[in-house]
Amino acid sequence: MVMDPEVVSQLLARNSGAQRLGELTAREREVLGLMAEGRSNAAIAGRLFVTEKAVSKHINNIFSKLGMPPSEDDNRRVLAVLAYLNG
Image 1 (cartoon, rainbow, N blue to C red):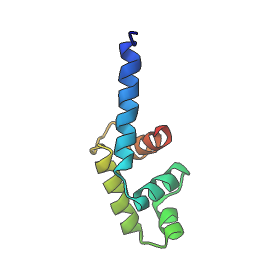
Image 2: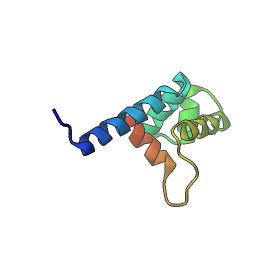
Image 3: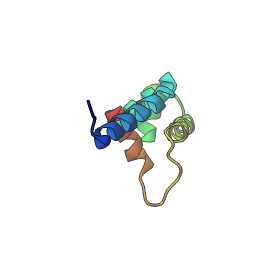
Image 4: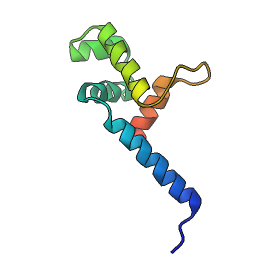
C-alpha cells in the first residue's frame, strides 16, 4: 500500500502541532482557550483572577512553545488560536 506524500506530510504536521500543544501547562491551555473565545488580555485576567502581566507572560510562553517568534507579517495570537482549534 502506497500513501500519498501530501497526506503523510499533513498528518505529520498535525501530529507535530498536537505535540507542541501538549507542551503547554494547564494554565497556558486555559489562557489559549479563552483567547480562542475572543477574550482580551484584560478579560482573561479577570476570568482567571490574575494580573494582565501574568496573562501576557502566559501568552508569550504559549508563543514560544508553539514555535511562533515575533513577526511583522503574522498575527501570533490568531496563529496560536488556529493551532489550538486544529490540535
